[in-house]
Length: 207
Image (cartoon, helix red, strand yellow):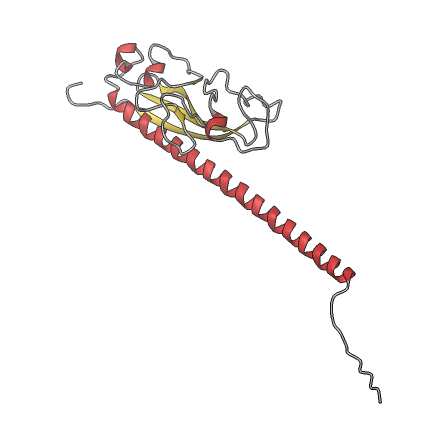
């Protein structure tokens, strides 16, 4: 007597496997895209925080510099002891945007970590100043802008897809007169943080 038994076998068909692979692929691409977006947002936030910290540092430098303002007046002798406010000496007109002089170890250029870069070896962030009298000879307004090139832009070179940092960013142009990206007729190549402060000549005993 022969006996036939039927065995029920369960498994996945080729179509089911392909559908599962497709779903996993779509899900993975979504996760990768989200990871890229989050990484870009974190990088942008870090750059902005660094630029704000640099700007605050320069606000402190300007306030400290005003302590060397020796006497009331617009003449050069009144401001000759200052490192940065001396740009206003002898003139009643605003300075326009200027690149402040480097007073070692202080610098108008900073690296990607927000550290002063007086030898301009690894510049990422640049600082410019603009000064004007509020009350001639006794109070002045100082505007500060900290800027850095946008992702994918290298000064003097072609755009590229990689994040601009480290050696790729060396040679950034911090000169206020030739800084790229200020022409509103075209897409700007820079991000920028602005701040302003007011400094006053303070009457001291014996002056």
